[in-house]
Image (cartoon, rainbow, N blue to C red; front, side, top):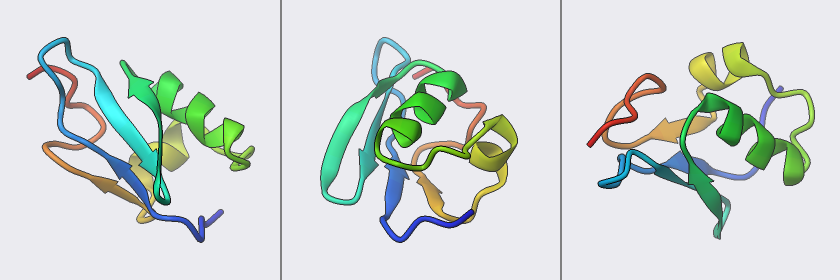
Length: 71
């Protein structure tokens, strides 16, 4: 599965949450991979799962990869 929209996961905030942007829109604050999966499903990427989120070249991770959740 590939996304035509850019997906950016921002560095962890003080509380450990990471902002998630799809295209030009911020879709929420994620506190784990399941939150990211749900946000992506809500914008139409219904086949996402944890493996896809971890390995996808479609996601730009800023400030650490999928295992970085603390500031």
